[in-house]
Length: 130
Image (cartoon, rainbow, N blue to C red):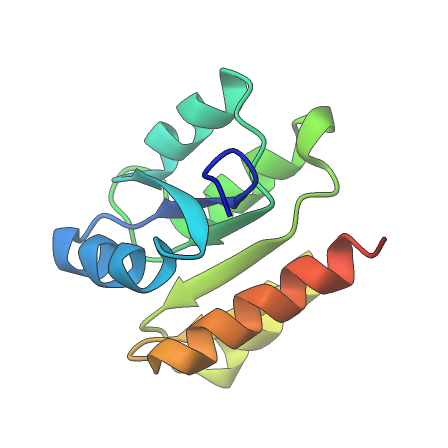
């Protein structure tokens, strides 16, 4: 598959190691754009980048994943893009909050490579049925 055909992922996490780990898992199957903050993710999106899925960490400085999610949902072009949280938060209340907001998935760190790939693939397939 050429990179032109690859599905696009926007991954926002303020931790370099988390970004590197996830990108290394995803890069052979997807075109991955990384952002080190919620604002940087929004900047990519406001410039017209439309990914097939957005992965957001929750705990980020300045603008957390919850606020980033709400701001992305305010961009009409991105209303239907699935957003999943990729986070260390393990509390059921956080997971409930994510799903109540409309999140496509809630993936807890640390995650297994195959689990991450399968969950992203399932989310993309569910949202972009032919």
